[in-house]
Image (tube, rainbow, N blue to C red; front, side, top):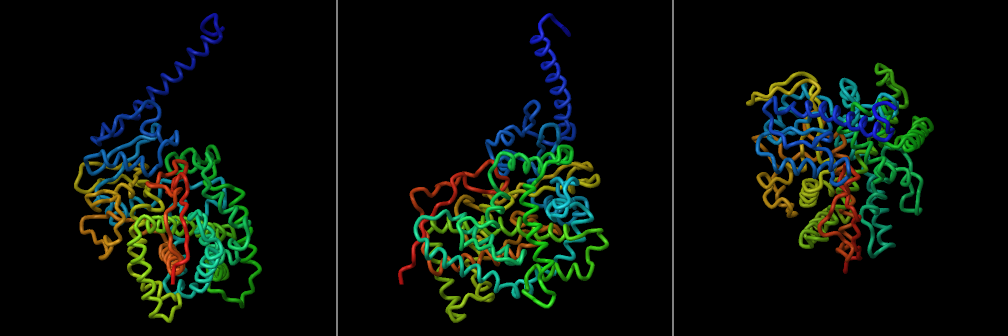
Amino acid sequence: MLLTTSASLDLFILLFALFFILHKYISRSHEYWSKRGVDTPKPLPIFGHFLKVALFKTTLAEWLKDYYDAAKGKYFGLYVFDEPFLVIKDPEIIKYITTKDFNYFMDRNIAAPSHDVLQRHILFLQKSPGWKSIRIKLTPAFTSGRLKAMFHLIDSCGQELENWISHNLGILEAKEVVAKYATNVIAKCAFGIDSECFLHEKPAFREVGRKFFDFRWRNALSQTLYFLKPSWIDKIKLDFIDKQCLEYFSKVFIETLNTRPDEEQYNDFIDILKELRKNNEFASDGSDDSKLAGIAIQIFMAGFETTSTTISFTLYEFCMNTKIQDKARNEIKTVLEKYGGKVTYEAVRDCVYLEMCMNETLRKYPVLPFLDRRCNADYKVPGTDLIIEKGTAVFIPMYGLQMDEKYFPEPFKYKPERFLNKIESTNGVTYLPFGVGPRICIGERFGRLSTKLALIYVLKKFEIEACDSSPDPVKFEPKCFLFASTVGLPLKFKLLQS
């Protein structure tokens, strides 16, 4: 026996001692912010402020918003276990961090895994200087001219969406319907294939894509740790995305890249990436096709969620606000008459009220509801005595900002008219659904175009209504770091009366 004559008592004593030592160690860590004069809610032993998220009792967005609403100052501190996080409330400080003093905060806090070659090349996960090099090379792919040339591919997906709904009228799961559309758009534009989402019940491309954002416990745990405990990722070799998904998408992409004849031009992302490979644009980075595949996977990750989430929540809000739905439809009707009844690139651009609706959806349901940064050198916050030390994680709670009645009166009300004039802030940043500054989402224009086009095809032919199973209000799924309804978004689709 080690300490007593009872093995079970020895075990209890050892466990108690271990817990006591761990508690003392982390408690000292929990003094970090108080020593620096930063207001901090009282942390729990061991977990800090992380317990509700760790138990999946709340979403990351609502977790940050709750603390945002309770905090009084320009910023406040939180702890994830023993690690200190600084959360910024003040729009002016946010402007400094994301734009004016961006060089101090170039990198996201999210982990950049070194144990997996494909994930290492996903732009969203990349650190300096790699992200900047890739972004510069990719930026020409997302110009308005490039998107206009690609419009025929996106438009064909809109036509398929309209046709499929016409043959499946009634109560439909809106998120799944638009997920088919979003998958089709990404498959055609970034992978050079037809996903056949509207032809088959369970097409392979859609089924693999579904696993990307599946509400499984393992996905929820790994994605949360990527954002909040990045130092653990390589130690335990945790994947942000299911490895089988990555391998499938990489195989499909590289097959298209290698088999498409050079003389054939589709005006899609494949053409652009083939040109980059031909010109050895990535040679200096020591990369191969895996880097190009990582770019295609990045387009899928960002484009799929931006499009499907924004469309489905916009349709949901149209059901709850029928006058807004009618107004958006009337605008579409007027605009299409101007273009001979055809959905053109210019027609999509001219649907101004629909753009306002989309902006309001992105305010209430931002695709990624927070921004994360990591300080890369000691930084004195302007107008304060606070020095953010190198290596400190900084979070910007965009959901909290965009639901703050100080900036958006009646924040829970769906009011597209807020965006009648472009939101200009002379005192910082309050609206940032695609991020802000040099690391703003590179695919914003692509996501907006795909979203608006789908809404046009739905509204010009169908009336959407709430049904008995439509949630009111929406409750968000805690096992997803993005916004998703716990019960889906079932809505009723009917043909418009002539």
